[in-house]
Image (cartoon, rainbow, N blue to C red):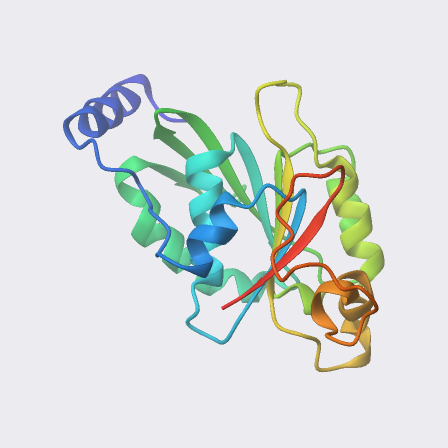
Length: 210
């Protein structure tokens, strides 16, 4: 936990520096940031801003977030980018894979991994208003469905959502991604929805492609 003096320093610095911690790039990243769908799949090539979107949403729009990679060793790039964005605004607890940020209101951003089937159960009952997945096609469907079961918050004013970043699957384990977001990925789907169905309908899904 941040010491009181450290927290006060951070608040004073943010007051002196009114710019936001992170701002989405114009175009698809901004559209994804503002999308009202409950579940969003944001895809694109390497360097397309997928990881930044997850870190930015966590820091700017949510109180309790968790960003998953399939394996802990895959979190390295996420940690490095978080260091660049978050260090002026908070502190990282490496033993808990947790950032505590002071940016208008306190925020918690956690990193997690579920390498093997069954590892997802260690997150049972742990509520987050943002459940984010980096490279979603690396996850098994049962892991994804289990983890989003606790996408909730006790704060009625806080939005809850699931955001998945990645590309179409390259192996059989990720084929579920095609079926799950099929209407948004398969142009041959009968009466397909619009490319970005961010209409806010109950449990709506959307995909964005950069």
